[in-house]
Every structure is written in C-alpha cells, then in structure tokens.
Length: 168
Image (cartoon, rainbow, N blue to C red; front, top):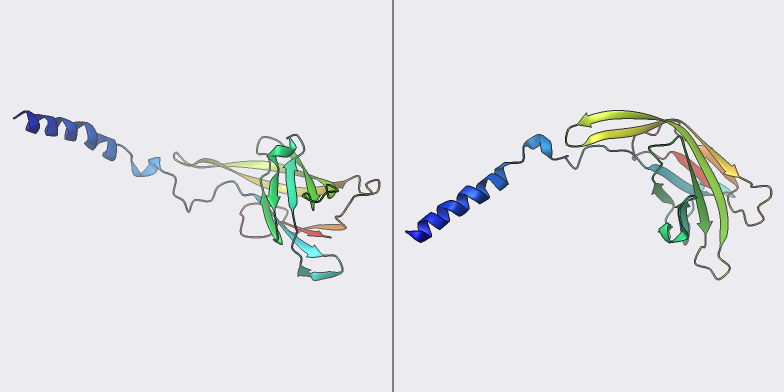
C-alpha cells in the first residue's frame, strides 16, 4: 500500500515537470538569430584566390588579449558585432603566436542596428544596416598586413553570405 501511494505521489510530482514546457517556450535551433560578421580573406596578388590566415587572433579593442579568438588555417571567419552600439573595433593580429608577436591592424566597423522581435522563446534578433569599415592608422603602422578591404554586403542579416573581403 505504501509503495503504491509513493509511486502515485512521484508520478504526480514528476509528470508536470515534463509537460510544463509549451511548444513556444523553446527557441527552435533553425531560427535565425543575430548574425555574426562573415569575413573572407584573399591573396592581394591574386584577388580571385581565397587565402588562409594562420594564427590569426581577433579581439574587441576594449577587451584583454586573453579574450581573443584564435583562427588557424582558414580563409573565412565569423566575429560578433556589438548589438548595443553603432560601432565595434577589432584588433586583427596575423601570426599572433610567432615569437615577434605577429602583425596587427585595427578595423572599426560602423553600422545602424535594427531590432526584430522573433517570438517569446527566442526574443529579439538584431540586424545591421549601413555597414561600413575603416582600417585605422594604416599609413603609420609599420606592422600593417591588410592591404585592401571591400564591403560585399551593406546589410548584415544572415551568416550565409560573406559581408567583407580582406586582401593581404
């Protein structure tokens, strides 16, 4: 008798835990969220050929070096932009693991933000419009490695298309 009461009690307690989530409480994995900036690297001497970056670190200029993202042997990277600002600056350090510390350039990305409400489970998504980029102090930087930049998409709405080309 006690075992049956205990079993009924456990079912009464556990069953609501599995049935309490409604379908709209879970954000579907396929839902598009705030896109990252997709950058592709090319050989400056042969602009049609993608070129892999080696030991490239990127970091928000306002963060410490320990917060850097490391990319190795890839010609395409994705980095986040600030959703609560109209500008994000990143330090790009090529061959960052070299004894010399590598070559650095700073890029400042400017944009307008457009918040879109998706649903209760997913919240908001931010798209970036009027996207622009500026290479900081290239003339005075003897360790500069970026030779040219081309914006491919002025509106960043998804991560499936390349938004920026960097030639080095």
